[in-house]
Image (cartoon, rainbow, N blue to C red; front, top):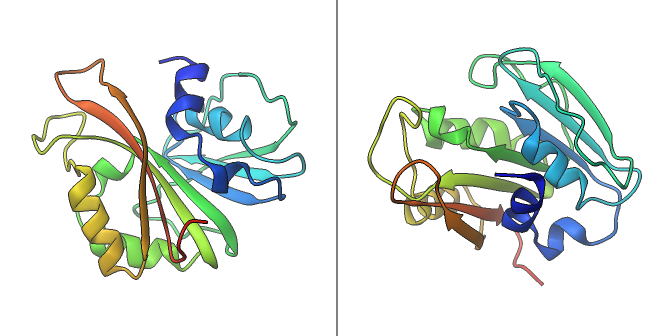
Length: 178
């Protein structure tokens, strides 16, 4: 997947509404989706890009000059050092969380009241070494609803390069989209 594909997968109006925002990318890896999000946010926004290993962000296009703050953090074990976030991005990382309900409850305390989760995952129920705890959209929608998120929007999907399923992007918030 390249940066254009990643941007197309997560592109959604509430992300691109023009206001300065602060996001965290949990499990950022090489930063493909960090930079995809940076391409969608307003100038003056910030993204905290954390990964279990020290992030080696690939200098992809950042046309709005978003501040990207990389850091090493294990989102399963470590406390998130910021709160009041507008959003949390988890691209291909939520499938590493075994206890998703407790994790969503814990991590959502770092969001503003109207904050959102932007999730990229695989539409599969079959576990494998790279996706140990898969979560298809219908299951993720139920998990977020249980955690008090009233809005669940499947943004886009694309064929997966790894198998016969699809990748999807979804946004969850406590307010209705509008």
